[in-house]
Length: 382
Length: 214
Image (tube, rainbow over all chains, first blue to last red; front, side, top):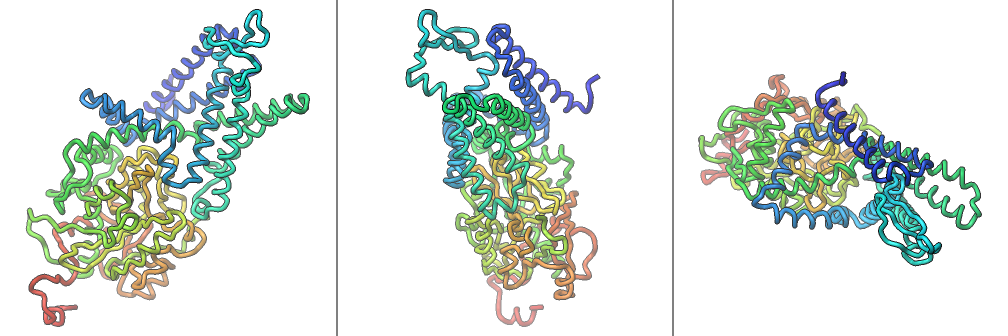
């Protein structure tokens, strides 16, 4: 019998399914394990466990009411036939600017961007090289009659040949060295910030903020030591270093579903949010039931009312409000102060039904002091 | 380090004089350097000079965190609702729209919600938040409960608020009359009200101030 609540059972199902698919692909892609390197079996099982954990957590996460709302509405917005082509173009653009270039982190800070960008691409390069090798999907074999050349075999299908002495060969065989250098540069910058920035120091915690950096550094350093051992030290301590490297990598893989690394899988959701917001802008605006000014989209407010009900909140109010979600954020702030004033001075002057309130406004509407940007201008309608 | 239990935040919008010292000081905080998180509003600019400073009330069950699809908003054990965690926030705007006090701000180009975190870099080491340390009228007060009770004998702090049928309990306190009912403050009760105190409309005269002022 399957354990736990329905959402747990669903998450277990998806976790097992994805793990089984990967295991099947490993068998198929390595040609019935004929290209599978038995020495790397520890890595394989760590990846399978990590995949199960990631899919399980992702499936649980997707079932939370607000996440489920965005998941469903985001896909509907993206796949809407009328906007599919422009959405696809937009998606490619956002993939480049947000995911490949990390533009939003560039705006947060140049050094933060450099740290994240180097760590991200270092890890992506390492994963791109090692995972197919470990799974037996990528395989090198000598070209018959030419001992100076290798043939790349992908999923058992022979592809290109290259000389081991070529620049391509040098770059390829040292791919993990380049990735380690990238990661170490990023880790050093990030570590420096965590040790010197008082804002970061106030909220950081070891398991969430330091451990990932320590793990990435350990993986990169032990990897570089392996290369140093066989390149310059005639294999000195190679066996020990190989075990040490495996331990650091396997621990990192097992940590993927639990800590900060999980943001790698959550983060792409920001692309779905964009399409949801675009759809909202094309539709009707929400109108504040106190000041009668537009704020955000009607669709977003209605979705939030549903989400809040699912979460057990009861912000329902008597007409003409209906639900507190129909009051714009500036009017919520005004009501809070007016309610306090009412306790001190008794009921004040009242506006007639149907006449909108003037609505509050920022004392200092400058960017950074009042609203932070265009979206806040819409939220707070200055 | 957690915020010391004996130090609490008390706000009293009635005392606000709109000087904007809090707005400027807020931007000096290291956790959101350069960005002011306090919301300082005119309630109805053409009718009254009354201003309202709103900081995060740090709810016990924060709506902003509950509606966050990315689990980006976390409440630490000392009851402070932290600003969105940078790796997780996907800038969906849910928290901004859901907060019953209208507190969070959205920095869309950074893909990040930012909000008052009670100057966690300061309060977690026993210092006052920036806004409370510069507020000349002490509309924003941070200190021990016995201190504010001694200084303001006509007031008492409350931290339970009613929005429709929903009661929200907060870490930050609002000062209300000492003899006021113990029930949660009904925020929506003020829905039809326009301004607090005197109205500077076309019929305003010095006599009305002198004669009717309290």
